[in-house]
Length: 128
Image (cartoon, one colour):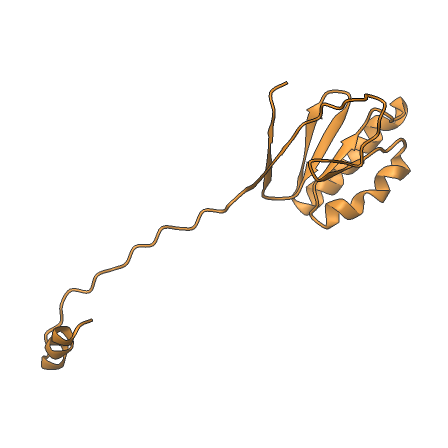
């Protein structure tokens, strides 16, 4: 308010007060990109574009990876090494753990990879 406005206010004249309209802030979603193509198919990688890759073979191995889910860290789960009878148990166990913390589990490549993403994180996959 300027000097003239203060004088008018002192004299008892009130002008129309303008309401300031503010736009609600949009939540920013983190996006990660990755490429699953490997030079050597038998080579185990520790990370793909900074995201940890784990290789559970049995259900007990999946218990070891809960710390990533609890700490809101994205993790790629390679199921290539899983025993067939354990695969459904591992996916069901991890799906339940993911649901409890509000994260999500997504199939990246059928029969090979899943990714666990913390709440608010999205991914963009490269065309294959």
